Length: 515
Image (cartoon, rainbow, N blue to C red):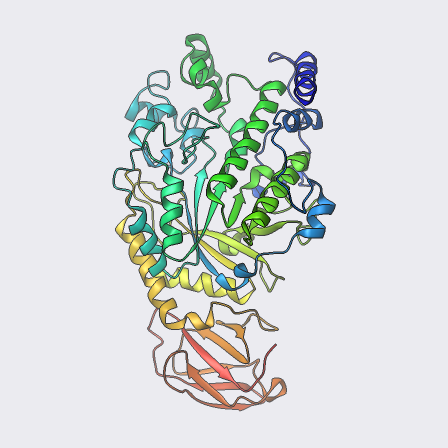
């Protein structure tokens, strides 16, 4: 009976709309003003409640047994952030996919090659009807990909979590999928990249997450009118029937959108079941309020599965995706994520849990000539994030052949060396009553207050007056004691003249009994 009802609903939806119907209505943007859509990255499909209802009905997979039902009240009642997340503090994100083959502009190559970057693409690869985005897939070989070497690098970098993009906006799945034929096992590398990396990461003692940006694919590629006319006339590339479900350009009818969203559900369920991720991450495309029934269902499915596994897991999303009242401080079943330190991340202490994803270089995916940040810059952003109660997720960009460039590796190892010495001031800490004092940042663990900053000559922490407590001892984490004095002007530290050193020092301050 359920199958008949699903078919009937899809028939009604198809009858109500056609591929040649009037333009779809604008979606509910979840309270984001029109002028801010780009800032918040709301790029999901312009669905309606009817389309979402059909998508939900189009996948008959039942919820696993467990306490969660697919509604906000049940998620609110049952969800607890995983205990491990609070102390982990640092992880590795990876943008790796087909877009690393052209390695031009950024990881949105597929979007731009049919309009803004058309001339560059044509010069280097030919017209899209001769060489489309799909034709990069055989060149995404990953022949030098060594998952154990990657995992060892990330472990030495001090990461506690590793999370690759299992699928980016381009709709290519990096796992062995029974849901979509456009996957890394059947094409390109001909191996299960997600499965291989996940196994290696867990062998190395770290947690493993997966990121799925696929919901943004339906509205991602928008060719110029001229390109569209040529490709449509020739049934080529974007309009090649064999690739229609890869590009999702030729048919953007409501019926096609409902099928796409059913497929999005199925891919998430497959990722959950095959890889038991510790974290399941969605990009901005899921922010739309109209998609709530699908998001509720994913959460209930994932958390019931995790209950059966005996694991503590979480979804992570941006802005108000899992905040149904459109207040981003009221997350239900999700750890909120902010993109880029200093751009949208909190300017002060924010109640945990939260994290910020940041990039090691000038682009998220690998591009030729990308600029790479220094280890000192990355450490500074890590420290600032942790002092405010957050988790720092650093993105790296491997090449199409599976190599992580040497300059990125050097930065990771530099961060790891710093954490090897000063990690006690980072891992398993929480914020103090204030996050910083000038250029110094504070964290707390037990009865110790940590101050992290660049040492050089006399240093005064003006906030640490006798009014907050009497300091009894100051020492470099893992090292020597530091001479100090304390008065109404603050805590005066007599440090070695190391102002020219690029990396901060972490100090352990005793006697204040911080909370």
